[in-house]
Length: 147
View 1 (cartoon, rainbow, N blue to C red):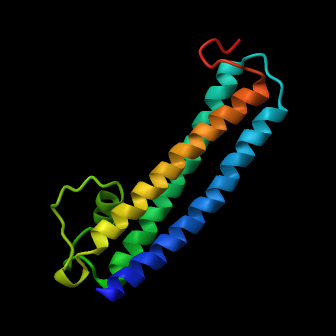
View 2 (cartoon, one colour):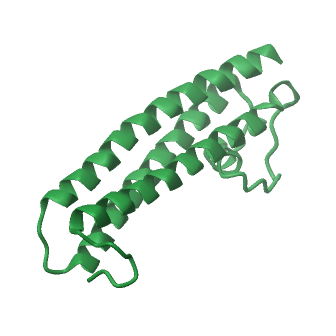
């Protein structure tokens, strides 16, 4: 059981590092967007939000790949199982249950889910902050009107 926690913690720390780097990129997007003047604040805001969401989605996919690699290394799933699919199902807390970990690694699914929930929450916070900063830089005080 201790090995599962150690491996899960190591992968979680790697993914938290990836997410921290992506946060820096997302904040850079928001700051860069504020430096530009635009005649179409709605389109500009949409572009910034879409770019930020895509960057975050790429980060989450990379984080799932890290989990899948670890699953493969420790042989957490039965031979022949699709570890990438298994990692996505766990990370997103979808929990189909059609692939289950081998007995020796049964805690790895919940550890993956815990990491995914944390990082999805962090992504939601990033999106909100980018939205707030972009609106602030565009001089928009109320989102619905967007001047």
